[in-house]
Image (cartoon, rainbow, N blue to C red):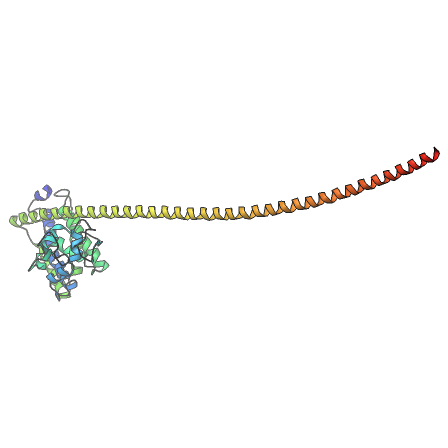
Amino acid sequence: MSDIYQMTMGDDRSDDHLKIFKCLVDTGADVLRSTFERKVLNNNAITFEQYLDNVKHQFYHQFEKNRNKPCCSRSPHVNCNVNGYMDKKIFEKVYNKTSELDTRQCLDRFKVKGGVSTDELDLSDLNFFLWNSNMLSPQEKQSLQTIMTIRSYICHPQSTHCYSITELENVWLSLENDILLFAEPYRYKKMVTLQITTLKKYKINELESKSIINEMATESEKIIREIKLEVQTRNDCTNQLMKEESVGIKNCIKDTYDKTTSFINEKAQKLEENHKVLTTRCIKEIKTTVTEDGSNTRLHSEDQRREIDSHLTVLKEKDRKLTMLTGKYE
């Protein structure tokens, strides 16, 4: 900031530095304002107030830092999830807060400021509205980003003479091309080209120099606020991703656990069924074996008994014959 205030009037580089800033906030803002009216307001077919009323719900959630906060107690938009952030100063520039609580209609505590017009929008405001319109081509988005990058580059010099003449000439060339991309129709483009050429040749006096430097200081504060919002947006996105990842991991673990439990139960059931089949089969085989062994044993015993009876019969016969012979000789 102090480097801005130390710029020396009459120094070519300092003068070019100030003129580039003037081109940004005056010519650049006028061209972007015209683009907004042409593209978003459909050549002013609808008023800026009507547009703000139409998108109030979106801008409310971009302004309200608690993105999941219900926009009203009986609203169908409960737990809305709208991406992006809207600077508090931009929101309060176009909307009035009429009460702390809702009454009957959604977001009725916020009213569009009566008589608000695009003439009140500065470069930062126009950048926000255009970027959130979803009506820019990829080339237009790139040019808008370049314009805002040049704004940061010019408003935050590392020193009063950190830019060479060549660097400033390159900045002029890039800025002119990117601003002219938005200037339509052709006759308007010619007027903007003439305005930029005239500004390049213009000699800034001391009073104008001080005024521009004060504007640069104000713009620097806006840039710092926007950077903080961007950091907050990135942090919120990161936290949201971490929450989603955490939920995803928990679901994955639960799903894996459920699948594993189901697999184990299925295998256990099959093992139990196989065990029952094997047990039944073994019992049958044992019964069959015992029956066969019993039959074989019974048959073997009968054969032995017959053999013994036969031997006894033979012995009895021999004994009878011996007795007869003995009696004869007596």
